[in-house]
Length: 318
Length: 186
Image 1 (cartoon, rainbow over the protein chains, first blue to last red):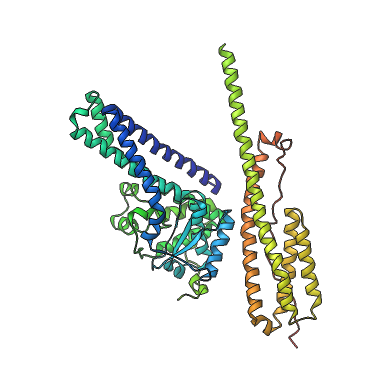
Image 2: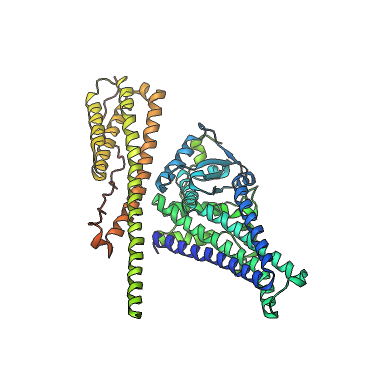
């Protein structure tokens, strides 16, 4: 498969997943309407809407708080700032995303923001100390393609969707269990509704995770395309895998933002990745990601990594 | 009656497909135009840096007139270039001329150490990196656009509709520093 085909295929699958979310929401609303009072269904939808609005407003400020990302002054870290500018020109973004630094020894990076014009890229100091320029560029290109593909937007929405579905399912379930008189419809409808309300949150979680994993492949392919250098992305991923530090301020709620999963990697390695645990990871394994790049780019990573000088040296950081 | 409906449906489908396809071509053409504008901004910026650079070197090496003229001429040619192809060529010539200018500068340690010169050199390198990033983006948008207007059915109607082929911005010629023998500084 070429990079272009991968990008197209991933877009299609993401579309299907989003469609799945909408379908799930419609089915839930239908169940509430059938099995219970119509007015209760309306109340549930209004509450869900308010929740969604609150979630969107909140997401803007919260992410940088959770990740402890600091803005950089206009004259600091000029070579790094230029790197980000160059990559975003290569990606054809109208505006260069703001640069933020996370003071953390684990090499990792993330992108955030609802629109491409108000987005930012965060990198850890550990990343600067680990990566040579070529690979750092690839990591930044990965984050910038998340922004270009509107992944940051999509994942925020997916998180909110999952929350809304869980909320409606919860309200529906409780009403069925305790509100005996408002119950309508026959026994079959009620049984269907119970099963639906119980399973919906898990279905939403699964959808969200698979959406996030698709997006990682897409962003890897995008980074390779932006730089015309698939090998750089593979090398960078390989270097990330060799490192075992975890991000200090990692949190399940922001795990999907990072280039490498900040939380679940160590756990899943300890458990041994089974098919089932794989379903709930936010990121595909780094090995699979490198394999996808190797197939698309038609190369094999060398056994021995090229020696390197970390970009932090060029920045004058220790 | 049924046939009429089927016919109407087929026509409606064709219209919808036509509109969607046409809009896609417009989008691709606009993306390529934006891509070119991005390159143009950086070429402009590169051109603006050059007079300052020439002045800075002149302050130390006034007698190297040939190199200054060459750089100035190459810059003028770049600013007059009309098409992406021509601009790419002019840009390569300018890069070669700048290479010679920097080779000349090598012979003047005072110049090489001056703050102004270092800053200009850094800015130029940065602009060159940005040109090559913008070139990658532009060339990929042109490729998508060309693929679209050269595929059936659009290849039949693209020209009458005003979708003309676009040129790539030269893919070759990243600033190769030419070999020049230099007499040691007096």
